[in-house]
Length: 134
Image (cartoon, rainbow, N blue to C red; front, side, top):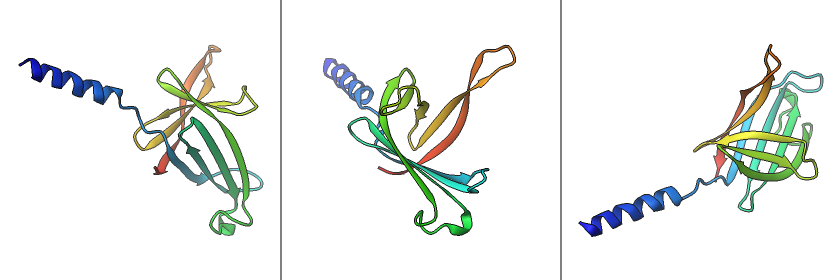
């Protein structure tokens, strides 16, 4: 009986201690409303050392050629850290520019803030990026 309790305790401890695998590439594809583009692709690659690389591709759908040539490409890097139930993505060199995200099994969900009528901020759900690879 004591052995069973010990085995159950160790099994639960191992399950709870095993962290979530954040590493991978998360992507979003969609339409944009802008003067120089009508669609875009957002890729966030999270690596083992708690850093991320965000790549934005914008352009016209008719010019899409495997994210190359005519599409505008912007690359940003930063650090990721745990902040309560959320993660904070902070760009390197710019501490004022950060994103609040939740990372689920196969999704990265961004959050923003919306100003309510009473002047307070309310957290609202933004876009969902789907995990493309591990």
